[in-house]
Image 1 (spheres, chains in turn purple, blue):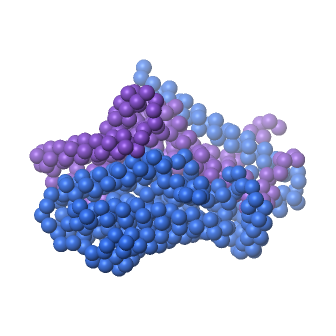
Image 2 (cartoon, helix red, strand yellow):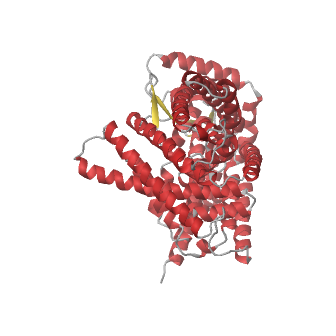
Image 3 (cartoon, chains in turn purple, orange):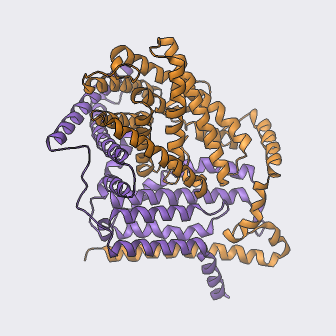
Length: 268
Length: 344
């Protein structure tokens, strides 16, 4: 069932890009560039960085809220990476036992600090990618990448994959739900499963073929045409410059440390 | 065996991005020269097939681990290496964007490990071993050999990329010691699945395999027959599909002893401790004291803290307070933007 849920999530995430906000209307290239700057800045800290990573959450939070995206849904999508992140981070406390931090009697080894760092990195990377898709949409991202130099055959392949995938996915969800409602909770036998999957394949292929023929009939020449033409205007330049500046500042200056020192000063 | 952003440094990730970009440009040029219109929808549907097939994890007998079809070799046999590479790349891009699987920085690594290696190293090996018109046994042997070689190289690549990035504390030897056997098993399964599909396609529609002479028959029938086998295999796979983590996660879990480990634990522990001692003298571990200082107030080096115990609590406290403050400010920005974005 998780696969069905995953496909539904895919559809919902995809639909979020049809929203209308000042961020949605920006040229996709600006959003792609800022996301890449974000990932490079956030991922370039060394393995013991924890505190300097925290201010970086401002970027996904700002994008998600300014674009009026559903916070709970996206939070759930991002949180899905945590189990995998925990697994890939767990070796660190095992291998890296040197004590780096002492809070009173509590000794914290470098491994635990880098574990925390890997968890934060995973959250940041996932949040940035998902926020980009939610506010831009996959076809627009492909268009932006193509205008930034990605070869056309890969762009066309991506758009074809994207179209066939949703066709296949929605069909699969409908068939699975129908079978569950009529199956009385019985598990799916191999024989029935083969029939179900075979039927799904034929339907998918038929529909994909119809879509392809319809596209040829409408003058498909091997290229996909994007939405309304957009250009890198003043807003886009301001968006890229503003975020890049802030992200570079967060990368080069330890804002967390300043805030902490200021807070301590006030307390004293 | 997806690489993850969280384990990668931008230097390693960027290098692999550059290598992958060159390969994408080369393959795209080749496809443009060949200019086969009918291949465009075929590549698209094969990408969608690969995508669904990859969601199904096979359990690997006797290990408690599971893996899924990589598909790079299979696509290379069906489409030729250039088209196959682009199809695998497209699937990985969609996974990175929609499912945060791997991540954007790690895309270059993943496309190289799972696309380039099988298409441009595994596939030529398969062609050489299988010859022009192999029988079932020969095709199976060739596919298993090629898949095992591709996946072993891929596993080595993951280990090297992880260790070169220096985010994970896993020593090279230990990591490789677990990755290679796990991916040997995955490679054999991958080879068997690949061979089954190839043998079927050769029996039903030999004309689509690049080795045969091209014909003018419709691509539709080919795609349908191929996808039938593929989905039938997927159906069987779903039956055996397990909730076990896939190879990479499993081998890491094994190393950490996160899963229940009974007798091997003590020897594993002794061996890893010994390996750790040996690796610790490498200069790789030396950077900690220089870089730990300016990067993280919480991770301030132990050496300097020992000299000034008074500062220790202050530095840590500042880190904790600052972290909380930064998080609060980030949330405040979100709150303000939310209020502003609210239609009034």
